[in-house]
Length: 229
Image (cartoon, rainbow, N blue to C red; front, side, top):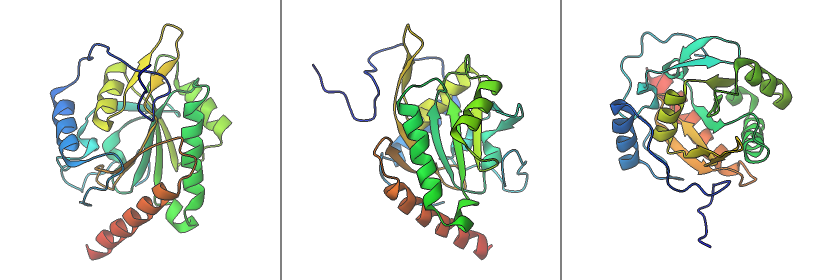
């Protein structure tokens, strides 16, 4: 049997490419040309607050995607509203029996490893790739069960098309089987304050040390950039 790559819960083989916007394909191509897993790109207000003064997004920013997302509180937002502080991102689904809880646990360990003053300057973002079942109520219950504090943690759901688009840009694969479970990449992504991918790491490794190191460096860069303005 062919050995599967690390980071997959179950084999994900061939399936038809879903319709993806030209913007997502262009952004994915740009990111793929500039980033590799476990490598750092050059560095270039809280949830749901509009940012109207920061200018256009860079050509490597995930925030170029103009899709609408719904929080577990039922509010509508765009990813660009997260600009201004680093974000630690994972795509999950609430009924996942094994891999997703471990991904979230790794992110929680990362949050706890940060100094208290730094922790408030980082966002943690979970996006479901099962929007049909992960309603706002299901996301609220997941937040309560996993003890994910607001406003530091944000839980989002979107349309199936927008979900596939975001997954493509992040380099994440997933596929639902006949039983309703998902085979999926176990990937944790760190976005910088502009929404560019600064670091990606396969999750389930058991230790957030490398993520914490990269995030701490990014926080210093972000703080230095803010103080120079």
